Image (cartoon, rainbow, N blue to C red):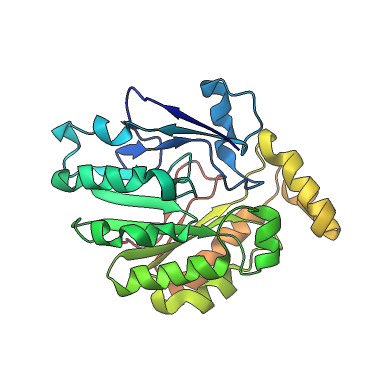
Length: 276
């Protein structure tokens, strides 16, 4: 892993996410090495020649760049194209330093991660009037997790983190992302975790050109019987994701489960019942 300390010119940027005003990414790159990571497109802008997952740039001055009161009470997401709680944050604690700087501004804080390291900062998250943590997972099978997310924390650690967040009053979300056809059992995930989760988000696997080969190599090694199925699902005019979306909506509405759907086939982001 190539780690480089850099000084950033800015740290809070306008958000391109369906919801939220700004995003903060304390790192460029990520150590988790997920085969489906869409953020590898960032290499087009950073000039890195190394394979995605083999480098991380650490924005060591990130917290010092938070000064402007215009961010007061805005919606800020941490971790849109990196994991702000990847292993390096144990050493640098950039995310903790950023949260400390944001407390006086009291923005709505949304954190996207797949790491249980987030529990380290519960004391700070509780000082925001509005804070939310979404931990992502695609399966409850840790063997499958090791194939898909080789350096990410185990599923057991993530679930324990969510329980702790919930117990301490932090709004807790499971982001079922990506939802892999015939692999992700989203009903099983909900049934196992419903007692300590406030909301579920769903995002389908999008076969970006940059990750398609990775996904098919994964299938060849682990689920070769699904290759033809994936060919069909991702063929033109396939209705697969519309059918899955309908099933999720009906299940969640029937069971009074708060949810949001971020499927890529839709012209607009579709959400379920409101979070707040």
